[in-house]
Image: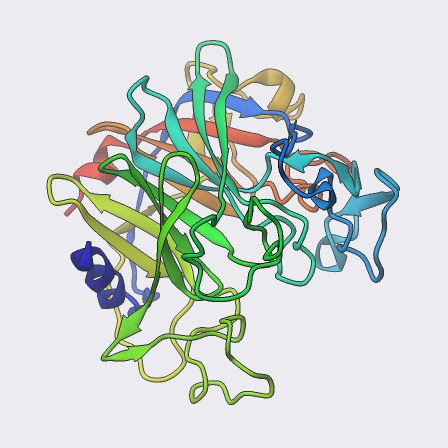
Length: 358
């Protein structure tokens, strides 16, 4: 998989330009959701610490479950979301990646990201991926399996949060996985902290961890283990905070993984031309595929909107359709209704013209 890492490095120095581009139409072909308040129990051999998650999201440690209301933050009006921290169990929130290849039963490999947004507040947020089955006929998403990441063979090259435990499960203090691909019966993850590429078995066991190299040098960010603060941006590290791997695509027929950073590298960068976009706030819905109870009574007939600022999941389904989902950042994001946490929504879009564009 050396080609995978080289392909990742090849895209690191590019950034989209603001050139004029075509906006392609989109038609809603399906709508399904996983409720915001969806939890999973940690494995039986996980540390007891993991059974209550989100204890470190406030100014001080909080051990009392469901005692502090989540809100959308000062930048968005500090509206409450109706769901409180800490959680009993681990939240199935933050959908941050779809795999192009499906499992044998047709389910989709999906990824939950690092937990609550940073290394500091996510040491009790376990890392895991899932097999999910969105059913656009019923509007429901079945979670067929959840697999927890662990490092029993000590492949992670730095000390993990649960270092001294027998299970050595990984947490959001170790990695921030933002992208996933299923290839040759293995899972490949793009991490935002390192940035690293993580190779794992289907049972969640880490097989290898790859540092990202560019022009013979390891790329580092302010959250990369070994980077000591104070550090000089552009000198001691080139990857911006929250700027590591965000997307990872699989090129059909080549087994080549294409990884892309969320933000430009510090220093000189080139440019790429964006062919076109889809406006997720202007989706046609002439067949009324939207779930009425989710979009609410103020929806416009024949129109569908996807009002989320963290759209982190895109999957090509066939030659004319893509599937898109949101990262709901539970319990810190709303979107459709003030006072109510965002669900994990999955939408199937007919975008034939977009996929045919050159």
